[in-house]
Each structure stands twice: as structure tokens, then as C-alpha cells.
Length: 314
Image: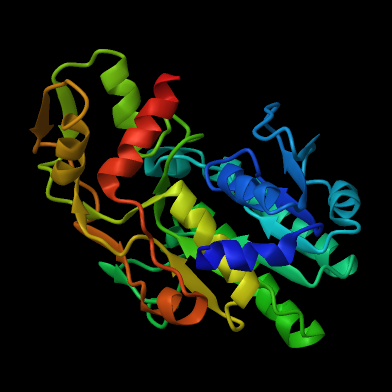
């Protein structure tokens, strides 16, 4: 029996709320918990059933009374709800990210506090960091640039949790995931992240696939099932009044990413070095995750990509 399976035994028959349970990390968390015999309630704006064993509630978490209802009687809350979008979309429509994030984060956390939920984990984001090549939890504490609206919304929720810890001794946990991908991702090329965007464009027959930059930019990609394991461990072990990175800790260039996809999908590609590559390097430091919550990602990039592509085709 794996360490995670032993840990999950603690959640049998527990009442657990997963906000954003239809999303990328959420659906994996739901499966782990339902497999363990937990009573899982999903709240989402997706009219989508991801697991027949879970109660699916279609509700808008920007309403406090709704949040008070759905958190009532819960032993634990996984607050994973978010709004995914590319950097371009978050910069062109900042209010569409900042305002609802501030509203539903504030409401879910406050409702959980009022309903005496003792264990909660919140998924913040790599976007809550100030700019860096390697993201270490003890560094980059200033916050993101002022034009990064979603990152600031995430930081405010982290601050809210810190105030609860100080005033009410509520020690809620926080994780900051990197670029997470996998089944259930957003594949709309207009606002998707890099992996689902490339997969959709390949599927749509773009050949050669044109990729901005020269392929040298380095990123940290975490498979959604690994990220879900990290989130569950963060809830279980706690994050000591601070936050923990969730990533692979591995450096992958965009060229390596595309070549990994080409190893099992038939397509040609070319880089356009006249276009920007984005940040040269963005990678998570994973030492704290290993020490504090016993987390290490286990899925290889190629295996994760294959599983994501298979799910997408189905």
C-alpha cells in the first residue's frame, strides 16, 4: 500500500467539499477521496458530472449565503476553484479574473471559518510570486508585478488565511502549483495554457505547428494527478502557517516539450524566433514540499502527455 493510500484511509466517511471539483486538479482529488470512501460534495459552475460517487452542486461561490450552505457540516474543504487563462487573456481582461477571484475566495474562506471547518487547503498559484527563474518559498515574498491581477487575487486569499491563523488560530494550508496539465484541461487555443493549446492546434491540423520563440524557454510542468496528491498531502500534514510549492521541479524546455509530443503524435513544427518566448525560465524549488508534506511528483512528462492526449481524443 502506498503512503498516499495509507493517508487517505483517514478520510473514509468524512464529509469533504471540493470547490472546482470538475477542474484539472479537482477531478483528480475527487477520485482519490471517493476511492477512499469519503462523502464528497463538488461545487462548480460546470454542468458536468466527473464522478457518480460525488454530489455535484451547480452554484456560484461569489455569493456568501451559497458558500455558507455548501460548507455547512463539512469536515474538510479543498478550495481549488479558480479561473484559468493564458497570460495574454489575464492581461487583456484583468477585471474578469481579479473580481470573481476576490469574491469567491473571500466567501469560501469566511464561510468555512464561520462553519468551524478545521481543515482547509487553498490552491494559490505560481503567479503569486514576484518574477524569478527558480521559485523558492522563502524568497520572492514581495508579490507579483501590479499588472498581474490573478496573482494578486491569490495573494489576498493567502493574506486572509494568515489573518485567520493570527486571530482565530485557524491553521489552513496553502499550496502554490506551477503549470499543471492533464485530463479535464481547457483546450480552447484562444485562452488555453501551452500544452492544451498545442494539442488542440495539432488536432485541428495546423502543420507545421508554429510556435512562438526559439524553444529555449524553460518551464516546470506538473501532471494533474501528481498535483492532486500534493494538495491532499498539504491538507493532511499542513503547511505550517505558510505555503508549499507543487510542481515537478524538473526543467523542461519548450523544444523538449514539443519533441516529447512528437514522439507519439505525427506532426511537424517550426519555431518563430521573431516572436517572444516569454520568461526564459520558471521552475519550482521542491525541497520544502519533500520535507514538509512528503511530496515528490512521480509521473514522467511523456507519460503525462500521452494520458492527456488520449483523454482529449476521447
